Image 1: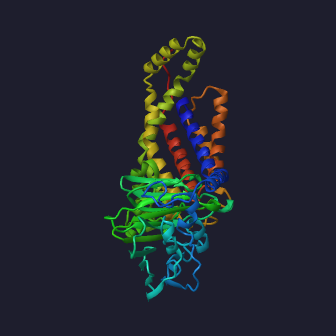
Image 2: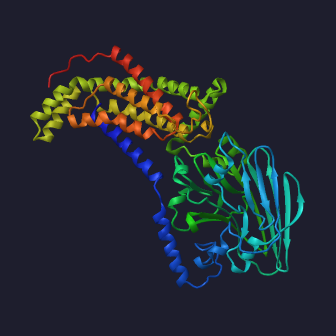
Image 3: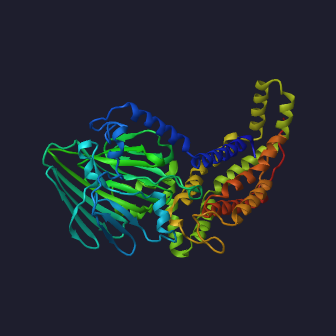
Length: 531
């Protein structure tokens, strides 16, 4: 393996290790620092008043943040009741106190208990109606009257001498969604904004954080943004929101705006105990407000998200090479349609990709063979001109030219293949299709790690075999020792990654070894031109 390839592999390994460390890192210190800062502000700052959609739209100061955050009712009115809308797949429980969704239950989704799904993405008191104005925060805790109720629909109303509110809820079949329409009429000058929001779960225990990176997603006019829940240490605000939500690797809890003529303001900020709050702020015009939203609480399945509308399918992000990822996912599903086993589908897709990219692999291997052939002459040139780098580079180029070796002929084919393999990697790491899907034997869930680490161990073995068979151009003993450690490093990284992803890496290595056998039999080293 030449120096450029070695550096590329080392860089990839470094990035993987750094990523693995960063996305699981604790964020307690950041949250504590933020809370200390907020405590100091609360001691020194006077109570604020409502502002327009600015950095304090949820509440003008930290002093009134508690009363203005969705998810925390303030009123102490008694006598609420709960109504459940639902079907065999999922249900939503709504309280007449605040008109909030207190529980959205997916039952047991592909073997995952509903309470775990709730801990991963859910939060209390979803769709709470609130206001940044202290005079109107009591709306978060009023007790509504039930006007209509059945298994799919609920109508609530509330009225006093200052305001009348009507909230309707409709359970959408088959798409894990609940539509909510809120109509508010103020009988006296009201606030400038009303909000509905979500609250992210509190910090998860370490064993539940494994392979889970909870993120805040915002889709707005002009693009999409996202933040990691644990890294949010300041208030974020964006105009023209389309949808926002909290997501784990496989599940999404989101609110989407159902009326594009109304463009709410989005805000998110860190709250107590490691929570994160977020909400859409709708304008109040002529003392009236309309808040049409859809609450989605379910798997990050592209087909389901497209059915739910509101651009929710953009929550499935396969990274830089999405253009390659979607065809990979389509092919994977097509193979599964006939094989009825995603493990077999992964194997077949990996083999197909390796066969399609074989011409590029062959070109790269030929180049490495050429480099191996002239390696002794290059070593002699390095010794001969070790004190004159300019002359060394000149004679090395002449030697390569005389032997028909082009340095780019080895790197370019690998570079062209990289987006394809990265896209397939991202699909197998993040696609909900593998969630809860068995392969055979001890692998009962391709989205979970190999419980007995058999596939990572086999991967290390195959990488050693592949390394022995691949033409080596490394002359430095230290570099050779580092290359010998690379299979162990990769194997260690794969211990905690999904078994479906490890299966892909293993099959990829096996096919690479078979291809190398063919290449070694068909390409001879031959003699080189003299230096």
